[in-house]
Amino acid sequence: MSLFSMPFVDSGVDAALHGVALVVLVGVVAAAGYGFWKVHELPIDKAHKENHQQIGLITALTWIGFLWHWVWVLAVMVAFIDTGKALRKIRDVWREKDTDEPVSATPQKEEVNS
Image: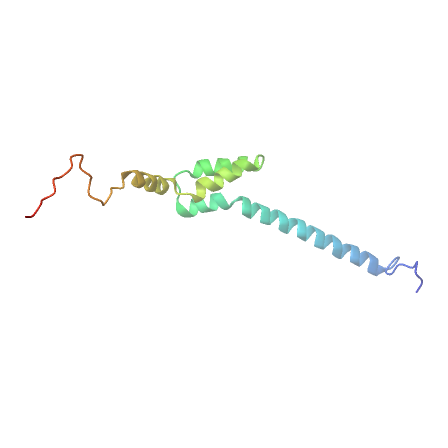
């Protein structure tokens, strides 16, 4: 074998290897497209699973997210964050009562035992 000779050139193996490379290329591109689609549909799947009240909004944001990706991030936030529960927690922080006794404004007299 010479340094300049190329294996599989002008043989049936050459065409077979090109066919295998084409199948692998198409398979990889299809798998990448399917994976991208499944990741992109996560907000809609989560909204349907949780029976979210804003399914229409999440679906619209997800579709718009194909063009503007930051909108897809908003769809993920709306789908995965339970806003009602979060607002109730914030409300409860403001309504939290102190367990300490209230401090009176008038000083109390100390009793002196003689």
